[in-house]
Figure 1 (cartoon, helix red, strand yellow):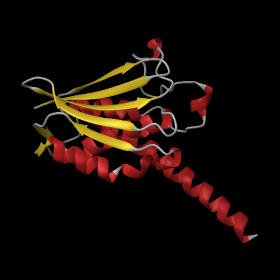
Figure 2 (figure 1 turned 180 degrees about the vertical axis):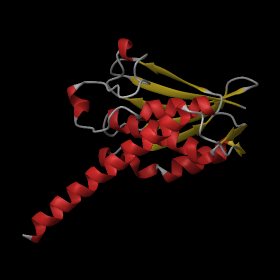
Figure 3 (figure 1 turned 45 degrees about the vertical axis):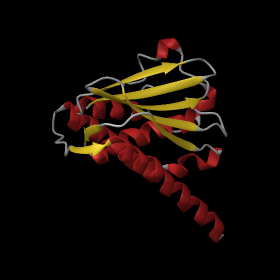
Figure 4 (figure 1 turned 90 degrees about the vertical axis):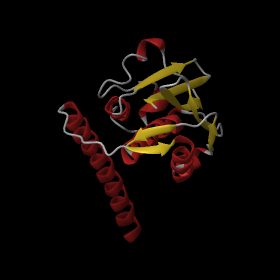
Length: 191
């Protein structure tokens, strides 16, 4: 039956895309470990950059009816490699969708928190991250093992990549999470 072939091909295609993503992530992490990544940092207006990224990722939560909202509390000029930083934000927003409750929006905020630092936060409502897991989530291949999340795919490389990108920018990543409430991942970047 042609329909069966179509289903098999579709399944193979999805699996291939997943494997390509894993290989890309491993390749990126390996390159960043060995200081082989050269950043193309350009001064960017934070509010404009965030608006552009959020607009381009707006459909990411469509299946779970999750809206993406942007709130820029203050502006600043940040020096970022636009492509890499977008990858970091994509990974964080993708996780927020994956672990977030249906029909609850994800909030992206941007604010200058000191003379030298700008904070971009991704906030979602969900089950939260257990206290003992908070230190481990940036480790390679670590995944939260709740039954709800086993089916979400992935191999636990996304946050490791985000962490590498933050460090490459001279920044850092922070996480706060309350059980069954809000989880916030923040990228803190030099201004």
